[in-house]
Image (cartoon, helix red, strand yellow):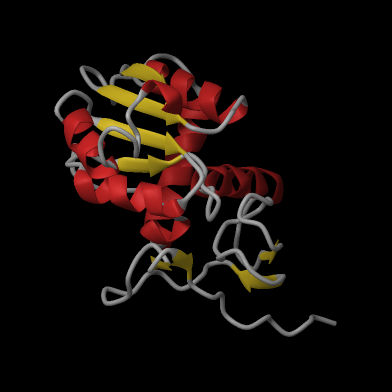
Length: 205
């Protein structure tokens, strides 16, 4: 498993996102056990309470042939007895990927920097990219296509849908959004704060 983190929706371009949605559609239509994660363990760390996200991740890892390892934040030395970077380095010796539901986006960034396995954002105060993917999957199922769809974005990162925009003042974007350029940082996170979103789109008539 290559080191590829998923900390915000900016970490995938349009083509990759469509491929993810296509794979999700196939698995939803036929949930028989697969071997994509056979022989691999995935740490599921939850510092926030969760029902749907935790259950969906745990069941998904199992159905893909892997071993889900649920861990409560209080059970680990996250940011207390050892640094997040140290925790990431230790976990990387035992598991093949880390899923984290946390508060600060910076915690995900530090975990990703300190580890050698992929880190997946299962919700932070800044972004909920997996929920964004689920929202897009549902929209595509209902509409048949995402082409030309305008997605309203509200002030919080956890308000659905959050498919292609940073949190901030309400604005809208049209699918497909411009893919990440090779020179732009990703995710849109720097210096402990989310970067500002683009200016509001003009109201449609």
